[in-house]
Image 1 (cartoon, rainbow, N blue to C red):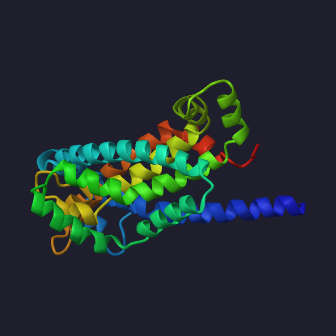
Image 2 (image 1 turned 60 degrees about the horizontal axis):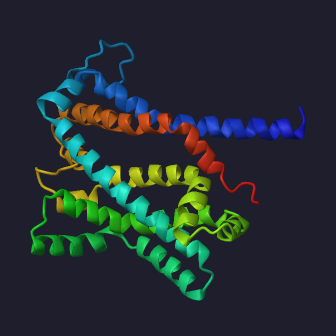
Image 3 (image 1 turned 180 degrees about the vertical axis):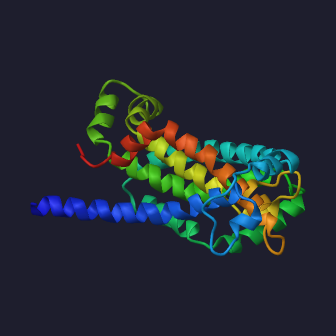
Length: 274
């Protein structure tokens, strides 16, 4: 076996081990959601059992988790649409500017993204309570956009910087305005990067817990907050929480499978420059 083959075998083994470690909690959660608590928490664990889907039915139908899913979908979709749209235009502008001010703005936004969420959740709550927006979609969307905007700008800026500047110069020679250059030249080139940014922004918005805990009530409660209410002393709540967690994963998993082709192209964008 050559050195290259040994390195490939080692890499494959490491990836296999990491995949098993990451998927084991998911598989265990799924098994917990389809077993009765007496079987799920038996010591030693029971490998042979009669599966049941009553916890899934109870979570999504009897306890109305579909309502929290709708809230999460509305908030996430609106927040991602706004943040990616604004972030794409801002990233394009920053990528074209080579001044010290542009670099300062970029690093300033990165510093804002590094703030702990708890430091920003309290001001968001005070402002939302003052203007009467507690338990509304508006305050959650604006808060998530504010937190995720630096991330989308930085990520999209890296894709725009990989676009050869000769394309912009050719567009200007052909008589394109700055807006036409952005819309007809830059956007088609970085389209895979837009899908990557959309996915990561969606993951951040979909899984947001702290802001949703502070800014929402029963009317706009999201899935992460709803799941946190289960557990503790009642052992059956752990089966309900497992059923809800598995259900939450499915929309994101389906979206990633549907967008897999664009994501692979986006992840590899910039590997070869020019």
